[in-house]
Length: 114
Length: 114
Image (spheres, rainbow over the protein chains, first blue to last red):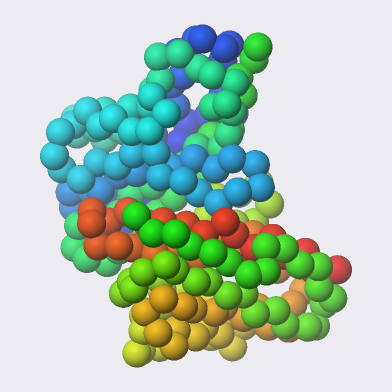
């Protein structure tokens, strides 16, 4: 079975500061890992994905995430936060067996302080 | 990627009534999914809708309460039946394009049951 844990339901950073959103996964098989962003009153938008190629994955809007198998982690980072980054971020995992189900974490709300 | 639209975008309904939510995709896809996002929470998969077969429901969700149709490869509907205030949620449809396991989401339908 697959699951993800997002540490910190709320994260606040100053504009221009480093953004670090944590995600740890549990999977009995090699996982696919995803980060999604949800802006207020909108659906989910895919930020980036890991599918067993390069362990450092670059996504949209300057975000990136590194797959660390030894730590079962897939933390999301951005060097410099913008006000427009304020949103809810969800980590998700699926397996590679074709089941296609995504299992979402509980989400992290990012606040950017001017 | 895929462009997904949902109708209605929001609705306020009385308890005991039913609401049908439509999901339209701009390309043919095999896998479509329906999720529920309760206020302040993460996404929970309701069911997987495959064209030409009955939907597959997750634990805790039943066909009588959430009947799903999938008449073709670009369209699906989810009905929330005999609604109660506990059904107040955002309902999202998504598609899996077969290009790495990621899913693309519609904008969601915000349902309030009074």
